[in-house]
Image 1 (cartoon, rainbow, N blue to C red):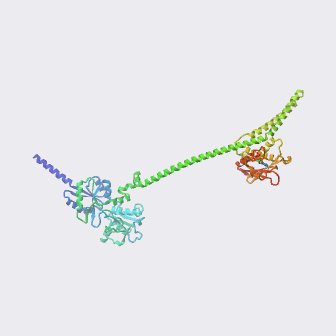
Image 2: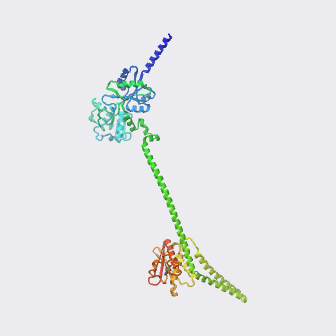
Image 3: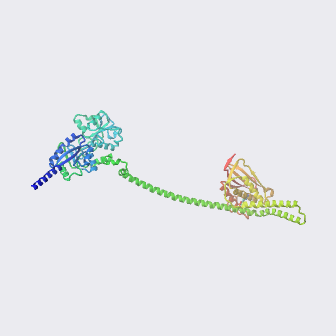
Length: 588
Ligand code: ADP
C-alpha cells in the first residue's frame, strides 16, 4: 500500500515537472503593437506547438526596453526581433540566432531596406546627398528599417543625419503617416521601409508618379525600389539559458516549417552588415565610439594615435638631435670666440709692448741730451753751494746771500725734478684707454717734451684751424707717442739744414667729419723709390735707426679708426706726414 502511494507520488511529480518544463516563452519585439504581432507570428506559434507537442510555446510581446529586460531576467527562452535589436542583444546578453525569417519575395540575407521619398515636384532632391539642410520624417530614432538603414547611407553620402539635416520628425507608426507628411509638404523627405510605397500604390492610397525615390536603385533579389543597401531578415534566437536540446529541436522544426502565411525559416544569415551599420553610426554596441573617455578614444582612434605616437617620437628624436647639435656648435663657437679673445688680448699686449719699446727707444736717443739738460740745474746748484761755502770761509756770508743762493738752489732742484718726472711719466708702461682728448693740447705737450729734452731744439709752430668742436675719443698717451715720433723724424730730416730753415709746422684742421693733423718739415725728403716702404717695419735710412716708429704710429692711428699717410711737400723741399681721426661728436 505504501509502495503504491510512493509510485503515485513519483508519477505525479514527473507529470508536474513535464508540464512546467514544456512551457516555452517566445519573446517577440512587437513594434507595430500587440495585435499586429500576435497575428503576424501566429502561424509560427501554431506550427511549433504542432511540431513539438511536448512543449507549449507561448508568445510574449514586448517593446524594445521590455524585451531587453525579459532577456536579462531570463524570462524568455526564444527571441524574435529585428536585426538591429538582435545584434545589440547578441553583444549584451549573448543571444544566438538559430534561424532567419524567409519571406517569399526576398532572400533571407537580403530582405530589409529603406526608401527615402520626396515629392516629384522637388527637382533639387535627387540623391540622399541633397538632403543637407532639409526636413526629414522617420519612424523613430532606433527604428531599423524606418531610420537607421537610411541614416547610414546618408552618412556615406556626406550628410550627417544628426547635424546636417534641418530637422528630423519622428512620427512613429504607422509608416503611412510619413508618406502623407511628404505629400502635404510638411517635410521635404520621408524614410520608410522598402516596398511600403508599392503596397500603398497597389491599395490605391498614393500614386507613384507623385513621388521621387532618392538615390533610387533596384536589387535582383528584391522586388521593390530601394534607396539603401539590403540587410538580413528578422532572426529567431536562443538565450544563454535556453536548453540546448530544446534549441536544437526548435531549429530543426523551424527549418522544416512549410511556407505558412507567406513565411518560412532559413539557416541563420550573416548579421555582419548590421554590425557594420552600428559601427558606422556609432550606436548600439558601438556607442562607446562617441564617448570621450580615454578608453573610448583609444579604441576608436588607435591607428591614428599610433601614427601620432610615431610622429611624436620622430619629432622628439629630431628635437633632441637638433638640440644636441646646437649645443655642440655653441660650444665650438664659444671655444673659437674664446680663442679669438685670447689672440686679441695677446695682440693688444704685444702692441702695448711695442709701444713701450718705442718710447724707450725715443728716450734712449734723447738720453744724451737729457743728461746735458739735467746737468745744467745740477751745475747751477753746485755753483751756488760752493759760493756760500767760500763766502762763509772768508766771513762774508750775509743773510741776503744765503737767501738768494737757497732760492736759486731750490728753483734748479725743482727744474731737475720736473725733467725726471716727465721722463718717468713718459716711459711708464700703461694700458690703452679711450677718452675725449684735445689734439692741439696733445701736440703742445709733445712739443714741450721734445724741446725740453733737446739741447738745441728747432722752433715747432702749432697752427690750430679747428673751428667746430670735434671730440676725438682716443688714448692720449698713444696719440702723444705718434706726435713725438713724427716730430722727432722731422727734426732728424731737418738736422743738416741752416738753423733758420729747421722750423717745423704742425697744422690741425677739419677734414670732412674728421680731424687731420699734418707735421710739415723742409728736410731732406724721400725719393720715389723709398716712399712705398715707409711704413714697413724695420725700414730705416738712419745708421742707428730701428725702423719701428712709423709702423707703430700707423698701428696706433688705425686702431683709433684713423689713417696715417705721407707725401712730399708740393712746392717746397721736405715731407708732410699726416694722420686723420674720426670725430665722435661734431657740434658747430
Ligand atoms: P727710424 O726713425 O728708426 O728710422 P721710422 O719708422 O720712424 O724709423 O722711420 C723710417 C724711415 O722713414 C726713416 O729712417 C727715414 O728714412 C724715413 N722718414 C721718416 N720721417 C721722415 C721725414 N720727415 N723726412 C724724410 N724721411 C723720413
